[in-house]
Image (cartoon, one colour):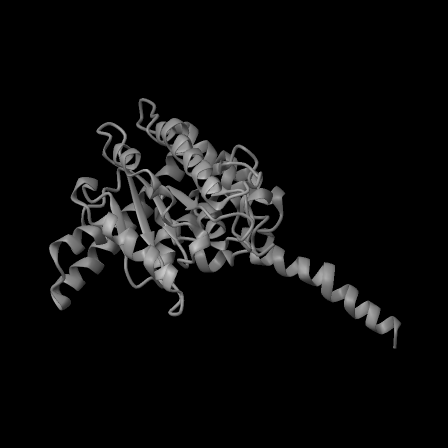
Length: 312
């Protein structure tokens, strides 16, 4: 299974926090699960403070981008809102950013727009969704998915809580995997090869909510994120999509959103933070590029070389 390069995707402030709790040489043992056990003792206040900082950085990043677009290209005010001008760093933020191939089902949430409207506009527990990505130039169905999504994002009744960041690149991806609260992945099983974007999000304390496909069946343990649906394959794609959409909305309404807004007297979501720690401690060592390369060397390259030497 693929792994993400920790050093390239880990936020600077999160790295400082790791050095303080895991030791200055933690990156030399980052694929060792025992190294990460001490992460569980990080004070909740410290981890939450870093996470809130990263959310504010995402907000600043989006606002600066849309301001520059407005000045240089005179984009329409509706496009400014759609690009994140109204993002609120105090609101539960869910990210979806990847290649817009049709099997990745970026529009799964939009199967029930009335239910989605209630989610984003609930006065006491609102949710905002940030989308980004591109379709292959030859993928017309993927382009159509983006067009339909963007039309929905621009609808006034969603109050600017659906956001689409244009010109997706590594810099956009870095801000998203560091700055959202939840990373959403909705591929149609069994087409997901791995899903490294979720791994990049996990090392930054972002919780994954994903279909059980690609890396997630290996990574999910019931305490470090959420699984959408099950591993049963339905006969028809429409039936599968309907089942998974229902599962996703049920998770959001009954588990994810209430947990995020469940605060103590210090305004800390203790149970959410506990899941963040569990996510980092269990996923960071298992899905690092360091572990991946070691597996290739120990399980494939070295045995192949030995076999070649025996046969010469």
